[in-house]
Length: 306
Image 1 (cartoon, rainbow, N blue to C red):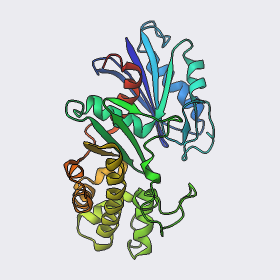
Image 2 (image 1 turned 60 degrees about the vertical axis):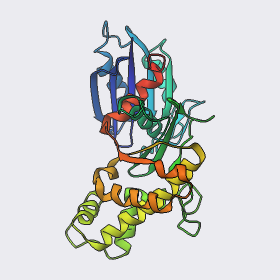
Image 3 (image 1 turned 60 degrees about the horizontal axis):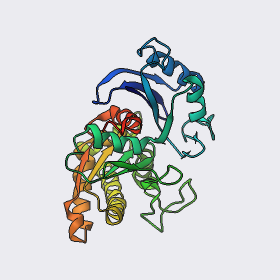
Image 4 (image 1 turned 180 degrees about the vertical axis):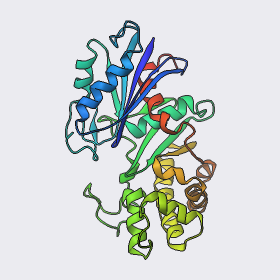
C-alpha cells in the first residue's frame, strides 16, 4: 500500500505518494496562492491521479499531513501563522472530504521533519532519541523517541521555539518573554542585525543576505548568527536533558547557511553542556532537505511498515 503525504507550509504546499520502502513515486509542489483551500484540493487531485484508477483512493492506505502550526491534532484544525485566512481551519475534515473513506493523521511540520529524518535520513539505525528543529520564519521542533513521534495530547509537543532562553528578552507574539523564536528565527536575526548597524542602502536585508555577509566575515552578521547559535544551544540542551537525546537535526531556510550556523552552534553546545551524557549530542543539518517533512508525514501512515 501507498501513503499520500502532505506538507503544509506558510508559502507552499507539497504532496507525494510514498511506498512502505520509502520510495517517493510522485511529488507535486504548489505555492499557497490566494485561496489555500483550492490549492490544497488541486494538490490532492494532481497527486491522487498517480494512484490506481486515478480517483486518488485506490491503492492508498491513508493520508499523513505535516502542517505549520499552531494546530489541534484532536480537533484536526490548523492555524498557520503565515496563512491568515486559515484560523482553526478544519484541515483533517477537508482532506477527508477530498478522499472519502481514508484515515487521515495530522502532526506538526517540524515533527514530521524529525520523523522523516529518523526514517529516511539514516538516523534510525543509531539514534534512540532525535530532536528535529526547523529554523525559518519561526522556530519549530519535533521529537522521535524510540522510533515513535512524540506528539503530546494536543499534537504540539516539541515546540522548542517557545522555550524561554532569555527571561529579560523581548516579548514574543505567543505572549511569553524571551522565547527562542525571538532570537533565532530568520526575521529575528535580521531585525537584531539591522538594529545594530547591519545593511547598506540598495542591498537586500533578508536572512539569505545576512548569511552571506556572515560567511564573508561581516562582524554584525557574524554576531547575529552567534547570538542565534547560543540561544539554540540553550534550548537544545534543555530538551536533551529532559529526553536524553542522541541526534539533533537542523532544517528550515536558515539551516541553508550551513557551517555559518552549525559551527558556532556545535561550539555553543559543547561549551554549555554540563552533564556527561549531554556531550554525546550529534548536531547536523538535514539530510533530506525539502523532502524530510513529506517522508515524516508518510511515516505517520506507514509506521506499521517500519
